[in-house]
Image (tube, rainbow, N blue to C red; front, side, top):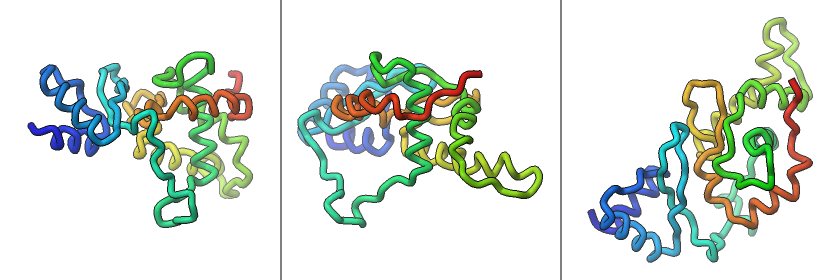
Length: 187
């Protein structure tokens, strides 16, 4: 495989197994370096080590925040609060590295989010779904984007590989705002 192919494959698949062939790993690293990217070690929900491409530490990609609404969409409040609550559950000690964090029970995360809901669906039997439906939808979206790992069917939420790409500056911001993230409820 050629170097550009290895890079394109890694970007398209989001995460790729660490190549067993040292020469292939070297070619992938060279391809990544050539385009000011870096390889980041990530852990799958099953504990396997994989690689993901991210921007080099000294490269700040354009965010689209300069008024180009077609290049940049802001996340909804529900998605942001859901991600913040997930981070707080999966990262109980901000003095530790953020990624990979630890698994958290999805039901616990949803239970902590429910008091933030400001409207209930008034029909009997629909109140719980009305309270939690949009948070469950936000979890599906965050999984699809890689901020939360794919659902393994065990009822647990894990931080996804996109979190591994966050810069130290981003993680420092999370540490400084840790106390304002939704707090896990005591059972």
